[in-house]
Length: 87
Image (cartoon, rainbow, N blue to C red; front, side, top):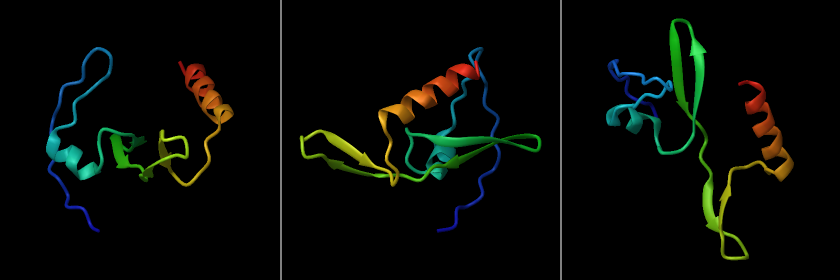
């Protein structure tokens, strides 16, 4: 499915580096709130949707998100450590 190009929009960035993406641009990203991929490109940043998973209930009745790859506790802890090391 092709996405329509959106005109650019200026938005303020607060002291913590946060910005609010206008609704018409969020809609172009798909399911938000959620996670988007942000990467530096020539002269700016690019926000891209990330593949979404399937929500279901596990055998214990708790919500379960299937994203295609198994995520273990060790994987999560390693990602947290990596993020901390970048600060």
